[in-house]
Amino acid sequence: MVRHPRRNVLDVVKKGQIVAMLAVGCSQRRAALYVGCAPATIRRTALRDAKFAEDIRWAKCNAEVGLLKNIRDAAKKEQYWRAAAWMLERGYPERYARR
Image (cartoon, rainbow, N blue to C red):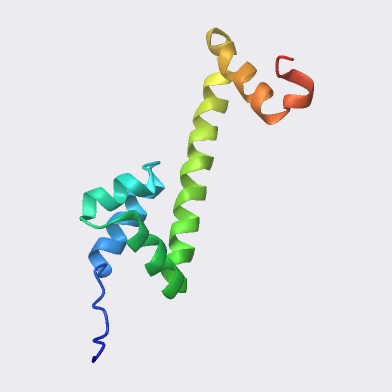
């Protein structure tokens, strides 16, 4: 039986769309659904393509930092003190989380 090489399901455009969605906080599952592939396809492609894997890591990190910045900005306003409490509870659970 002759094995044919798999064609890449994720072209440059789809990879860009995935990275853009992850950068704004979407899940990998949602990004896969959007571009029309399985989440496992994204994982397998990232294993074969180091640049794509790095772009995914950067996008997820960027989304997390952006969300934390928004919480921190909200916490600066007195009426949103709960945002500060939330960050303390999750950032320093040994001191601030409920026991």
